[in-house]
Image (cartoon, rainbow over the protein chains, first blue to last red):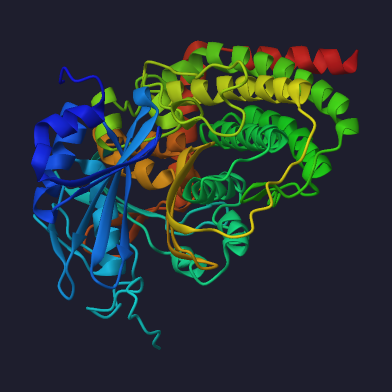
Length: 149
Length: 411
């Protein structure tokens, strides 16, 4: 555990300039933007040192790239801190956090299914929600997805 | 020893979510668990981006038949977070009442099914008998036993009629009395203790690592509850407490649910007393560009919704995470080392996967030969209870309570 009062100030102190942006939207919602290379380290710190509970992760296709957001809940502070990063298309790739945080295993598999983001070092890189005979390289939540039969 | 694979699921008419469990067993003992989902992937996240903000409220209501108000409230909270909208006071209280009614009937449903699976059909009939008046209240207040369609971004869709309040208060008093009796009978029963204590223990560390939520995590002694962690509706204005249990086993999960029913009834009573007058809707005209997070405490745990908008009429991304999605992976931690008869109970304790125990079948590894059918496995669980019943002799507290109740009804 750290001596900093809040999770946010601890993250600030630990990572300082490597954070791209901190947006305190209101008392209960904070969004931190990081470079994709730093994301696993920041998440690891937020879970192992600050005791955050990973609610889930969201992936958003923003045309220019795919945004991935990890939502951590800090119950004592009544606050949700979201770590955001952007990975580049056409072959988005990012380090997995499932190795040290089992709560992320399923959601990372789902994001691979729906958005085609490859999580390197994932402990169990199988499909999760799409059918076994779903064609490779087709990801239904991509903006350029076309329905097919 | 020869390893056997037991497939569990994936479909059952009673299941609100379809899952498929593969149990690897050696003899009677489970050595590994693998879970597959996706059988009922309906593409609701995608569908929601094709509808307007208002229409999506109805779509997310169809995610789950039992948590039919938890998803809409998490979604409207996300939209309200996105746009920074304020909701009128009266709407907050109405939302709280509907959410707690849902918690009561959902937990009672679980208590009944739990009783059935361990061979206590009395508990099953009892719990479902008490559930019926709650559904009547839902129908009277909202027009429907389920799928109330009460939530909307900015408030609630319909007002409550204050003429009904006195009757609801009486019904709540009744359910509190009935539940206290049921809690006493169930939690004192030595057979139930022997059958559920120390079974499927989820440790604090595992509970955090798997990110589990709801009664599953609270039974492990962690007071995580969105109603206090990130208060919504009127939960921060009334007096209530988060129920926790230290043991982390099946018994703890049952105790948390039973006690939560009483707490929920008390919350409803306070809301009815404190119900403010005034508008019920903020009449949102348009939703700006931005992003919002909404989460709510459903009966099974935190429901999480993330909404991203670009200033248009519909969201460009809508991420939904239901509570079972994080509770189910924790089976890897809770089922290993237990017998097949207990696995039915352990999966049951988390709630959703309960009914699929009926579809369990034991298969020889590498072939499709069924060694043991689902029915036989349920029998397995019930026989374990029967053996215990014989050891403890009768009558058990549950049986005594039934006798008392019958005498009272006769008189």
